View 1 (cartoon, rainbow, N blue to C red):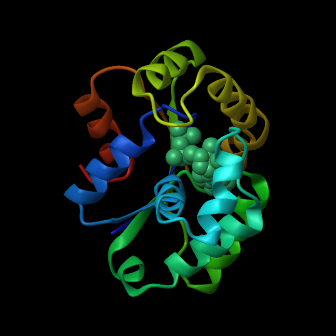
View 2: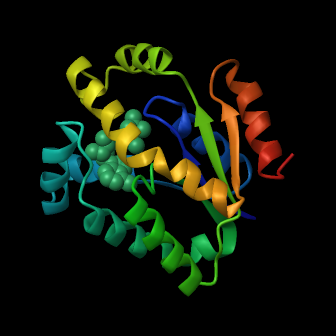
Length: 186
Ligand code: ADP
């Protein structure tokens, strides 16, 4: 049982690793990107709102995202099995809101995995992936947003003493092993 956040630039492989590790260790995988894409597909009000930001490479407003996460974290499976948060938090206000939620729920965060991948590699990967928001101009914007809004979380969690930095470049299995080790799962 572990409660973890996966942090890193778009294209770092957070999703790939989170899915794998969650499955293997029976953790709940919570991806805000997946949840938003699902809402877009279903054409809900949330989906329509989210799409207008995602298409531009901008972040969906904090209160919207925090509401989604609050609802998800209130479910029983999370308490029982632990979780990997993938793509949340992405801003300092989101991180602080998460701290408050988790302390109310009596479920402190164990570890933050920072998957580090250089910019050139990230751009290469995203162009190959070709998702709707993986167009060159949108990628550039997402990287800018990441640097400005999300990177400060690295220091935030470092100061809390729960950050583990892992290189996201190299063999996928090898990276999985390193993450499992950092999480105390191997
Ligand atoms: P990537 O890791 O490639 O950026 P994600 O699937 O995590 O992909 O996110 C895709 C888009 O969804 C983001 O660019 C943003 O618009 C929106 N999004 C996802 N998570 C959040 C979040 N925590 N806060 C705000 N917006 C988010």
